[in-house]
Picture 1 (cartoon, rainbow, N blue to C red):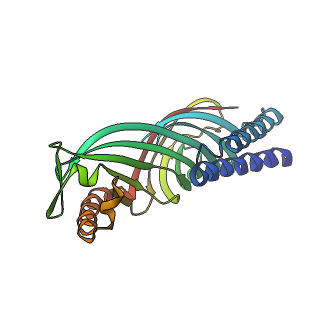
Picture 2 (cartoon, rainbow, N blue to C red):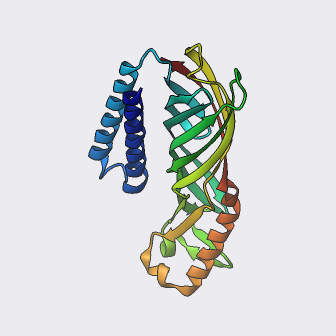
Picture 3 (tube, one colour):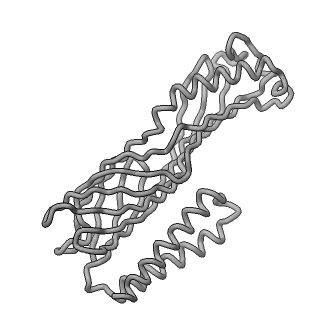
Amino acid sequence: MAIFYFYVILYFHNLVIIAHITINKGYVMKNRYLKLALFASLVSFGCASSAFADTGNIAIGAKASTLGFGGEVTVGLTPSFNVRAGYNGYNYSGSTSQNQINYDYKLSLGSVPVMLDWYPFEHSGFRLSPGVIFNNNKLSATGTPTGGGSYTLGVNTYTSTQIGSLTGSVDFDKTVPYLGLGWGNAVGKNGGLSFVFDLGVMFQGTPKVALAASNPTIQNSPTFQTDINKEISDLKDKTDKFKYYPVLSIGLAYGF
């Protein structure tokens, strides 16, 4: 059993490395290291499951949730406690309008959750699941005037030549707490295929909103800075509700 837990610790250690590289270092420059960490994680998972395949202490699953689509690994620690880790991701593009400015946006969801599941009632699938999420959710947008000719920012009007286009982003805290509950025990006594459900909240902090003109000349104008700050304030009013991000997920798991 000591060997099993050694591989489990190694597996989750490598997942943390993946989360750190993915969120803090970027995909392009660190792609090689990301692949190496992922390969090491898969090898350690394979060693753990092959060495103790008959213990019923490990399961893999696939999920769909408000964090995107992804997979996870569950490890049983005791009859009352499991630990889970996985990855979720999804990209979505759309458009919206704010103060007569049309924003084309891209929502990028990416997260690595690590959860501790506590089953307070014997022979029940109900669980409480506190945890931490390595969070790479973000939004990027490009704004152009709806009329095609001018921007109204604050109390002033600017031509598209003066501003060019508006580029903006919304970002969140990178390591955030999670609190939830759910149903299903992927490493329960029966093993095999099981249904899993989660409902909770990710506390990802106040959104960080940035907005700037593509024309660098106007950035030095105090009047423009006052007006762009008013636009940022309006955007913050619309995004502040996402500091508490609801998490709803359903999936299937298979216990070995």
